[in-house]
Each structure stands twice: as C-alpha cells, then as structure tokens.
Image (cartoon, rainbow, N blue to C red; front, side, top):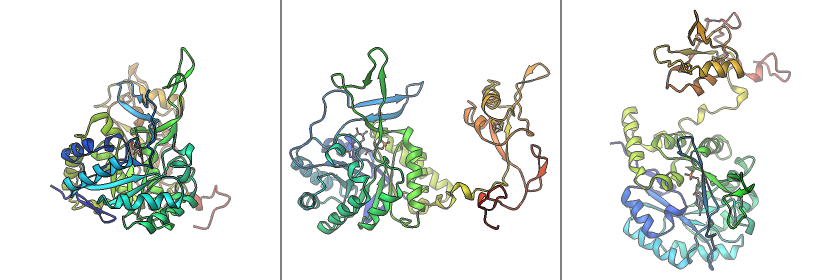
Length: 434
Ligand SMILES: Cc1cc2nc3c(=O)[nH]c(=O)nc-3n(C[C@H](O)[C@H](O)[C@H](O)COP(=O)(O)O)c2cc1C
Ligand code: SF4
Ligand code: SF4
C-alpha cells in the first residue's frame, strides 16, 4: 500500500484527507469518531470570541439535487461555533491528546482588531493544536459583522491579520480564502506577504437556492424570510480547482502550500486538487451527506492509484498538472481533433445528433439508408466535445487527434506540425513575430 502520509507546513498527518471546518468538526464526539474512521486530520469548527454566536433554529441547509436526488450543491446559513470558547478549547486539547498522530488545525474568526487576535492565539496554542486556519471566507452572517469574507475581500486586511497571527503565535498559519472575489490571486498574494505558511480554499460561494412558486417567497426561509447562504458540494469543485491552479501557477505565490477544498467526495476528486497544486485536501459536504466512513474509500482508492502508477508519495503528485494549465492565448490553434462514434457501444439514443445539429456544427448523421444511424461527418466536425459531453454511454464518443500531415476534411488542408498560438496568429492584429 502506498504511503499516503503528508507533512503540510510541518503538520504531520497519516493521509492527506482532512475534515474541513464545519459541523463534522464542531465537537469532540464528532472528531473522535472521524479519527476512528480514518481521517488524517481536521480543521476544528471556527472559534470566535465569547459570548458565542446564535444560529437560526429553522432551516440552515438546503440542497440542489440531481434528477436522481444526489446532492450536487449544498447551501448553508450556519455561523461559526455557537459553543463557549472554553468548551471548544478543552475538547480540542483532549482530542489532540487522544490522537496525537492526526492533524489538529483550529479555525479562528475574531474581530479585525489586534487585541482580539492577541488574546485568542495563546489560548489556542496552549491546547497543543498543530496549526491555525484563519477563516476569511464565511460569506453570510459573520461578514455582515466585518469578519469572514469581509476581511477576505480586502487584501490589506488579510496581510495585516496574518502578520498579527505570525507575531503572536508560533503555530503554522493557514489563510482560508473566499471565492467571492474577482481574482483570487490578490488575496493569496496578500496572505503570502503577511507571512502565511499556507492558504486553503475555497470557502463557500454566495448563493440563493430559489423561491416557493406558491408564495413567491425565498426558500429556505426562517419565519418567512431568507438570507443568502454559502454554496458548496460537487457543483463548486471546478470553481475551486481553477482557483487552486491560479494560485499554484502565479509566479508571486507559486510554491505556497495549498490545502484544497470544494466538492471533494472521492479519491478522484482529491487527485485533481493534489495534481493542481494542493498538498492536503479538506472535505465538508461529502461527509455531511454520506458520513465519516467515506474516507476509507478515499484512502484505499488513492493508494491503489498510486500503486498502479508507481507513485511513492503524495508530494510526488502535488502540482504535477500545474505546468499543463495555460492561458487561452497559448493554446495551439493548429491542433485538430475530430469526434469518433463507436457504433458497437452506441445505443442510438440520438442525443449527439440533436445537440450537434441544433447548437454546434451539424456534424452527426441521424439516419443512413432509412435506418437510425449516428456517424460523425468529419468534413463538418470542429472537435468541440459537445457530443462527448451529452452521450449517455461512457467512451462511446471519443475525440481523435489528427496527426501532423493528415488532411483535415473540414478545411481540406494538412495538419501543421508547427504549433501556432493566438499571440502569433495572422488574424491577431496585435500578434508578435513567431
Ligand atoms: C454547514 C456548513 C458550515 C460551515 N462552517 C464553516 C466554518 O465554521 N468555518 C469555515 O471556515 N468554513 C465553514 N464551512 C465551509 C467548509 O469548511 C468548506 O470550505 C466548504 O463547505 C467547501 O467544501 P465542501 O464542498 O467539501 O463542502 C461550512 C460549510 C458548511 C456546509
Ligand atoms: S465534436 Fe462538436 S462538432 Fe464534432 S460532432 Fe461532436 S458536437 Fe459536432
Ligand atoms: S449520444 Fe451516444 S449513444 Fe446516443 S446516439 Fe449518440 S453516440 Fe449513440
């Protein structure tokens, strides 16, 4: 079995799977069970100052379901921990003592005042916790009070608070970023400038789930009124992956350790984050939907994959795909692909024909000799991948890359062996010499 252990900014963990700061990590009884199930670490539910916050006692959660009732997106309006600080600190100490080999990171959110951070940091350090995560991401409730995303949207505040944490504590500082921002590189750069040991992302995305069609009121609601919440789960994963990759490939932040979060529920999801730059991953929604034992499949799946690929360590995976992420303008415009339908696998549902005919390039037949028949017309196909995306049969439609010299039936021209991107393309009035 492959070695899944990690050393993330000095925090050791038997595997890269941590539970994200959220209800699964809000008290000892949960976290002890999570560790028994095999989680490598946790980020404890965000602690704040006393008196504790008060949550609504109505629907805090709601879900966007797929037609077969799988949770695709998950929305919440929960605040940070609503238990007294001393209770949380006592339990953090006990759990860390019971499981010294697991990562115990404590999430924090206190007002943007030096005195507040100076006060809470030694109390957390005293528990024996391995590190802290600064919650600059919570987009609802707390942000109205000048905390959470309200800090994470102002790079100067991120830098300032990070500097306080580095000054008043010896613990590694992980800055958790909000996705509710135009360009995530700016807050990440600010975290680095402030001395952050790592960044984690994403926290949840501002969202409203919908309205009740009979009353035309927002849902879910608490006594007739709702408030926007934070969106997470599988639906946000591509957004999170892009943000992780942006930070990993930005020359100003390249190399900063990243803990990847957002829609992770399987080892495959985790692999995507690791390869795009993460050194650990965090999970919330999937644990809330399926329970703690999902970590066992995640760990064995990743381990089997590593064995099959001859990969010895998680560190070998981290960032491997980052050099393959590029700006659009550097993509090779001389590369040509064509769709190919495997007629043995085709169940003749016709979806590929409909979508290509109505919204792409009219490149798939529907009939031949009066019979249903689905075949790609290479002379029309632009290789857009739409038919592949909608075909209900896995690997029934694939894209074939044309070899250099092969004739592209759409243009009648041979495929060039020389790459040509937009920066040098003749149609680009701003082109530079190749
Ligand atoms: C109910 C709920 C409560 C959360 N509370 C916190 C919190 O207290 N602190 C925090 O940093 N993130 C909090 N989050 C955000 C998660 O830690 C995580 O960043 C987000 O859910 C994305 O991961 P996921 O797609 O695996 O759920 C919460 C998420 C949910 C669903
Ligand atoms: S790849 Fe695009 S253009 Fe080609 S057949 Fe499929 S949908 Fe049509
Ligand atoms: S969508 Fe797939 S299965 Fe359906 S007709 Fe097209 S190739 Fe066949």
